Amino acid sequence: MRFLYSARKNIPGTPATGGRTGLLWFAAVCCLCFSGTANGETFDLKRLLDSQKANTTRFMQSLKGQVVPGGSPTQMLTRGENPARAQLAGIRTVVFVSRSMPEQELLKLLTQGAGRRDTVFLYRGWGSGGADKAFEYAETLVRKLPESARKNPPNIMVMPEAFRRYRISHVPALLHQDKGKWYLVQGTPSLDQALTAITGRRFGQRLSRQWAVSEPDQAKIMKQAAARVDWKAQARSAAESVSAQMAGNMDLPVSKGIENRLHIPYMRADFDIRNPKTGMTVYPRGTMFNILAADPLGRRSILALDGRDIRQVRYAQRIIKERPQTLVLYTRLGKLAGTGIPASPLNTSLAQRLSIRTVPTYLQQEGMAFRVVSVHPFD
Image (tube, rainbow, N blue to C red; front, side):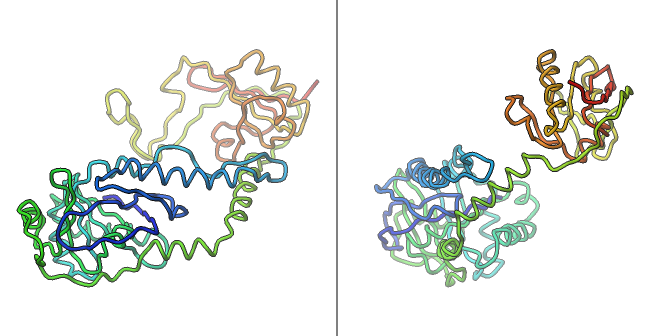
């Protein structure tokens, strides 16, 4: 089961009745991108997704120039391929549905679509609230399907543009690609009957009873909501939050002398841990295990420090020079920021797991344990 939101605007309409049509709907996962164009009568999804990606890139570039206090230009959106491409690349049958349909009719079609990777069921929207409502609704439907259908559930997505593009006001309706062309029929007594009508070119009649679509156009709702948001302020707030997190927000006392001890780093498995080669469960969920047990011959080293103390920063530079593989963790970034040393903020749970009580503290793997050495800062 998959849920995907998409939207596109300013597309000329075409009759949503029988006959050849062009499938030009736009698949997107970013609710900020409401525009894009595509022409032709073939299903060129890659081009449409690339258009959406370009819109996202333009939005990112509009934010890159913003500099937060103490920070640098920040990219707020992730680069990369649109996941919709992989999900929709092989789609040949689109079934338009709505909550207004009797549940048994809807479940009947969903059961028929289970396991069909080339078939997708589309809703026009879910109304107010977050997308979690759509997920909850879809999960409720799937739980009502026969067991065989639940094992390989149908694809369920939200695409208001497809409804707008084909002027779908009543459902069910079915769109199908046959011999390289797309055809739309009104009514769907069953998937096979609707597909047979298309391959036989029997158009101009409704194949079954239909119901008016009850969901609103989700693209319009999302666009209205987006218009009320100050995106630049949101971007600044997010950038400031990230900067604050990266600066570190933990305090530990300074080591007063020299402390030398062994620590076995046990942790509880939050999920089943499997051997990547065999797939066998090594540590079931809830098991306490030594994180060094998988590689007792390793030579791991860790250094924890407070970057506001220049003595500790110099200590880190000496350690990195001798053991460049050392993982550096800091309670506060401070002067460590200008050294070029790769480092990450230390948090309370990790400090407890590694038994880091003061700074600076150096950990060196010795078989199944860490040698933990805390020293008073010195020049």
